[in-house]
Length: 244
Image (cartoon, rainbow, N blue to C red; front, side, top):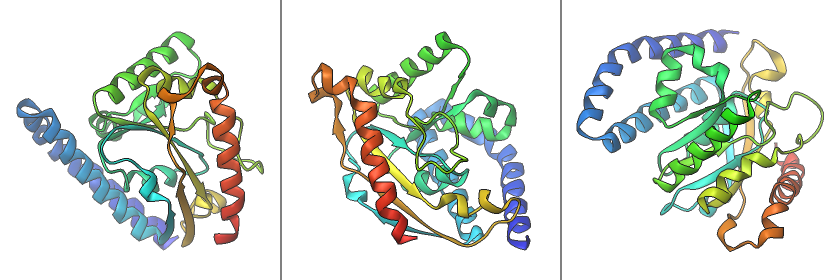
């Protein structure tokens, strides 16, 4: 419980300090949006690394060389913990926006950081708005911003290795012709969700699979992409159970 309290205190202090950073970031953005994005990425990465340290989270990272550094990509991740974003965001080589549920917009200062970091907010109940989010994500990739999405659509709280994937998540790659990088996380719920509200030391794995080139796929391969990626990720998830 002490670990949890210390971490919460740090997060609260960071969010309070953010009130000072907000006008500064807005000022930087007037001169260069690219500089504002780079500064925001560095600041949030630092904060996430501190939280991971305070939580006592140790990660074995596999296949990071599969992540292209010269182009934006669509990251496809399985989702079991709030810590999934911390573990992966601290490793992105370029500005990256995560697709989050629209309910996250009510968290004020946190929402402000997410918007600076090119995050998109998905309305899961409105198909029209959902398609707009997909189109906006595709445009960001075309403009050099990577996007990360959880195709399960929600956090997996059950016994299944991975929930079925929503095919709409992959429309982002189809519309932008970008590479798809599957990312498989194991044991992340052991940090927090398995024993709420305590934070406990945990060993997790993060594996980046070889990228898939949507632009080179024919129509049938594109149609089968959600199932193909799901199968690869489940196999990797099962393999990495022995590492944690």
